[in-house]
Length: 114
Image (tube, rainbow, N blue to C red):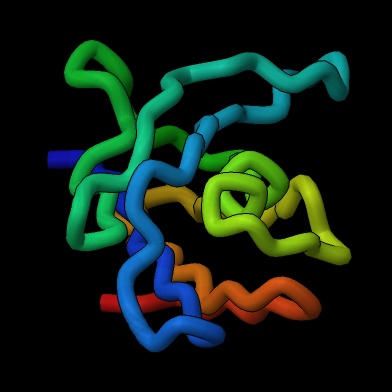
């Protein structure tokens, strides 16, 4: 089974970031980005499966786009990073990716989770 998931944690508040808009895209050979799916984080800050059921994870470059501006606006906070794009490489034979995002109004970090 192929899977791409994410977990967004608001480190400034010390809790999961719920209702963050997340978009999954794949870069085509032309260099254009193709939208595979859009979702929102749940109360636990997670999107458990972003890859649509009819899609197979193939080698290539993918990216997650996080709408931080709308999230922080709902918290009545300003942010330096309104849109966070996290691109990552999928190699042949890889099938599962968990890409967490640690978020604050003035910074962020990400890593390959498990």
